[in-house]
Image (cartoon, rainbow, N blue to C red; front, side, top):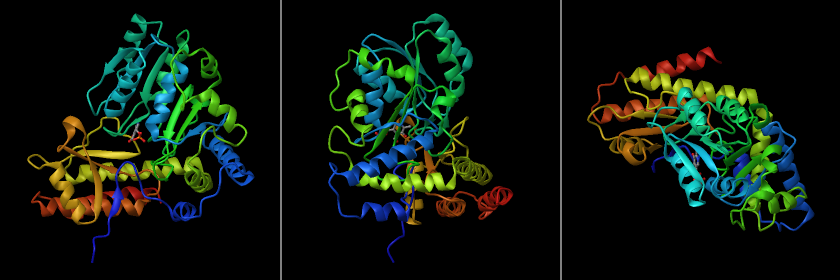
Length: 380
Ligand SMILES: Cc1ncc(COP(=O)(O)O)c(C=O)c1O
């Protein structure tokens, strides 16, 4: 039989049946009351997801589109921003900010680590005119979580600074309530914990950030937050929306809200903990010192190419991600965000053990699975 492929990559992630069903429908036209009604429902659900009265806006783009919109709509050329650059997506903030002629303080951090609070204090002491702090809540390339609460405190202390958070692999994994935390701009994308195919990005902004909108001198057309806000408040979009994705988002948000956000966060925590502890039990070293609950990265054993190991794992039916840039061939990453449950974790850990065994690594078969089961059993 053909191998049954199980998707464990940190985006895209598997789709729930309700979403697949919604995606399989005949298209409807978007300039209709029918679409408007769905769109307004989605806005209400997004407000609940983010615990706010300000609905976010949607773009037909991948997540990077909303990242770009965060730069072009809320900043002016020459604004100084601090970028927490701890991986591939931190680099993306840096590159986007530079592209639009912002002055970037590039706080480069070793991959797998998070920022140092003392260093942040040092930077803001030297540059009190910082207009934005750009950070990933969950840096997917290194499976690292950054503490955004502390950055929110710092940002509030500064004169006129916005905290801009890439929540692409944290929204739907953690309880991310931007108003409570003190985030000014929050972006996310459809193909992660929102359990949809790629193609939708979401951008939320605070009242403080709103004041910047009419002031920005950076060119934009498609990604105009002002234009979209005006339209989307009325249940329409400025341009053709990703109609089927929005209809499917209505379904995935229903699943998320029905589960309940504290329960959803707990499920992700248990899956992440079980994955991490099981991999350690097998004898592997984790990549991150501050691991995120969305995905777990681990080094392949010494002398084993992680990409070769991934090929063996794929033959067993598990598609996991590899490392990027200098981590290529060194690490592998297992996702556990969105449509995953604890039994998926048992499966993938079992796959990892068998693949390691197959390539000749000395592994005590079942040891990792046992560890994962222990953790899960404590949280049943
Ligand atoms: C944290 C983070 N930021 C940004 C992106 C880029 O999103 P996209 O590929 O949807 O443009 C990703 C995608 O993996 C991500 O994980």
